[in-house]
Length: 208
Image (cartoon, rainbow, N blue to C red; front, top):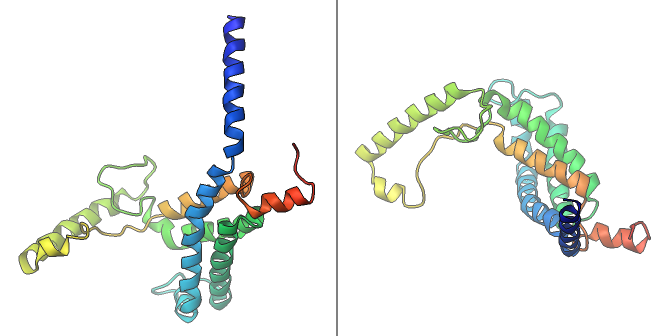
């Protein structure tokens, strides 16, 4: 038994040694997935900052947040500059903290009341959905919309680019981005494939 375990341990260590030069691929994938999303989101906010501030501050059709102009600028700059930092792999651990905070605020203020799923999943992909009522209501409305489109429109043409759905707008995306950012908080930008790595290596901050 001991010999078998010893043999497995040697093979597993070799496997880990083979993976070590590729350790940066995981963080790189997360960075290149999230970075453009945040850059585009921040850029769009910067281009319509007054509308964003109005949505943040209006209690009737918006979020009803205090200091909406300040928060709009903070959200826009955090997403835009944070996204650039992720793509470059520069200051990743510092950049993800305000991005995580932004995602947490978005989840609580803009999406929480709609439950988990972003779309009305008839078969739940996550068991902790707390707004199943909205799923049922969304599916009823989707069926009615499809019925109207088939009766009064060219349904085949309308669905050539994809089927219709009803946006449920739950916290799914914000929570997913938060967890991906959390992973980057602990891994950093990644070995070899980030500017952080080369800066740290130049300053002698890396352990062999």
